Image (cartoon, rainbow, N blue to C red; front, side, top):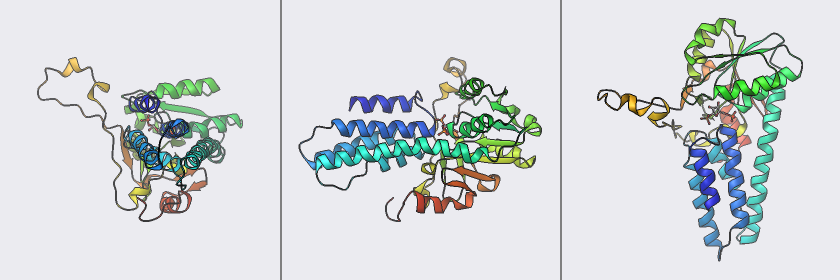
Length: 307
Ligand SMILES: O=P(O)(O)OC[C@H]1O[C@H](OP(=O)(O)O)[C@H](O)[C@@H]1O
């Protein structure tokens, strides 16, 4: 349990971050916990698995990859502890393998839409979006990237370091310069924390203003998302919760401690409506946002009544 608590804390504090990475970390945590779980009965086994599943899911509320990973990994059908344990180990490993392959597939598929000479704008730090960009570059396409800083956590600095390691010409801009530079951009490529049944995208705060600026300038807006980032519970009407993080990520508490009329808001994500999205590059191919429902039904194997 202590190891799971440590992983949960790393996810909560964003030492482990990125919707795909937290999903994989959760799958690994459940697998390792199940492997070592010493219980006297099946009831105890079920209760302990449920407890760690809930703990992991509670760490970050928005990225649906997290509950999807937990649900897919902690599945078992046997009423025998040893068999159930092996089922969880197998399912978690399958999920992890599928997640790695998905990133590779998204890179291959999405990079075909990148043209020689393209200037690509990206936001935050998405491993799926970066897979598209770096694959296009490794295929010999002469591309460059404009990367946003992504306040308040500045994940843009991870992105520019990653792109620099590949030798990709990159420009770092502050988030508020997005519209100013949009005229130089050919394509916007971003990741996803969740995709709702209506095709709306939930991604790092500021994504929707990139989409708006791209739409205004008639530039293509591409989302890179593994199928496990689609949200089953939105089919039955549950809204996706937007995580609001601590004010001290935005400003030093000392600066505002005496300003009695000021409060700080720090939502980590925003919604981009489907009409601003040209395509979603997934591990099962490029789809329009309107196909989100089909992905949830057919590729996540979701059944009405399950959620
Ligand atoms: O799964 P990958 O593509 O890496 O990232 C997807 C998204 O997860 C990140 O969230 P955070 O930085 O963990 O809050 C960003 O919003 C990013 O676009």
